[in-house]
Image (cartoon, rainbow, N blue to C red):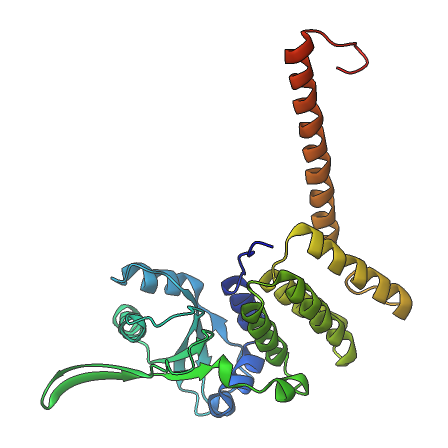
Length: 284
């Protein structure tokens, strides 16, 4: 079976936007405990566009920028970078530096940079960028999290929503050449959402993240849909089976199937007309 391209960036960005406190509590608990959560964080999407547009690097990556306040009422900006490259990237540290100084240069705000490394290279762990000579130097240190470091058993017993996001990420990467196995893992992760005692809101949100990340070809996705519908029917639940997005997707898939059949039928008719010049009206 051919490989289906996975979607990492969109689910990660959506999850961080929806669950920033949980994100920091899971990956950076010390930073989480330093923030005054009584003041609602502000997502700075327009400012981030200016920062990345001004950067001189060729590539663009998934990032999020937030304005938060510390317990002493100091305002800081948190720049979060999600890196899912599967190989060494020699420009990574420089890019972290460029985004950080551009944020400070454009807006004169203190910025801390955090990085989530979702690659499969255990030895690649960039944590700073530095240049200079002798005592005249410039250096940026940034905090990183390596998803490969997390143990599966610990993730499976952690109720933070990002434990599930990490599990989905790891299984998406490990099944990139075996999509049948990916469908099996996707179902196990989706089913576990019901068993974690999550709210309906969180179950639906996490399903959306997992569904977008662990992409499947249509036939395997239909298998998954059937399992979800059967499970919810048996458990007398209507969480995912009534989601508008899934109904629209099922309609699109049905339309594609009907369109494909109609195209095939027309191709056969065209071939017959070439061979026999004319056909009975009942076939045309």
